[in-house]
Length: 412
Ligand SMILES: *Cc1c(COP(=O)(O)O)cnc(C)c1O
Image (cartoon, rainbow, N blue to C red):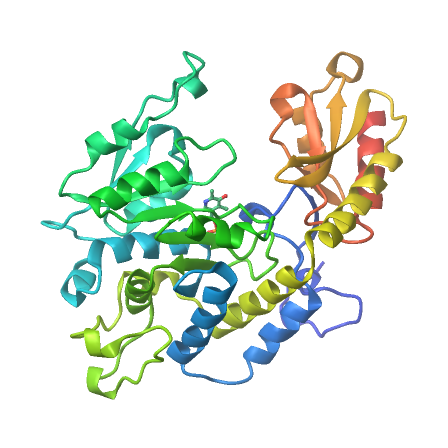
């Protein structure tokens, strides 16, 4: 196949074919590695439409602020280049507040309160984003529950012992099993006047979670736009306290203008309270364009309009097609499970390694390296299980998954 980008557009040919690339079936989930999910045509069309005009970026974010405030119940909201970008901006907001001199200095936090306290058991690769703004992560607690040495996770008193006049924020990572609870952390944080940042990147659906963490007292919450919301891959939401969201916006938008000339939207900025702004802050490296902002807002509207049951039915039908297509396969056991993987249905394929001569991990690799390439969820390969999730599949994909799995199970 020619890799020439100049080849003329032919019908039935995707942009990826024109680039000389194959597409994949994403039977795993909305991971960045697999380019997330399939965007709805309405979202893609809104992005294309957005690209045909110029607007004032601050005004666009000002309108997004109103829409996101309503959707989350927070005082303010902001569209970011992903949940990771939202966490970095949240951290920058807690470090600098509305002080433009501090904004200008980040990520150098010499002399500032720059410590972000978090439970050792919640450390994860995405907390790079919080450190990226210049914060120092302070770990608390002994994760006995996870090491198998005991039953306890971090305790509230352990957080309290770590709070000093150097504390800029507490980071709390939302999961079904997170301890201590957000309410307990918020109570502690309020007593010490410290903001709480919540990483809720993957906590949708249910849609109610858009409001839940704010309602429980979080000062800032980060969501992914490219996961269940179905927005652009490089989009996210930061929602929370108005002064902090305003700080995030000031550190992210391009202000290469005169302060006197700047007429910011009142929905997001209190210009009379500001003495100035950085021309370009630390958030510049995670720029979010008008196409992403419009795409995210369109996807969010559709996400809120599709009720949880409809969405679940759509996913269940795709998972059922995989399960029934694999019924009776030799060398593996097929189980349709529901609400087990982040509330969604899935198909668990337990691989009988003795019979087949290869493992669940081998099967995942064979499927991904084959043609068409199928990416399964590899989270349970240690348990001898390959999982197929429907959330990023489109009609036609289940049949490809079935055909590829059947072919691999027959091969030796
Ligand atoms: C996916 C995820 C992120 C990153 O989200 P992006 O929108 O891809 O930047 C951060 N934290 C957690 C817990 C996640 O699951």
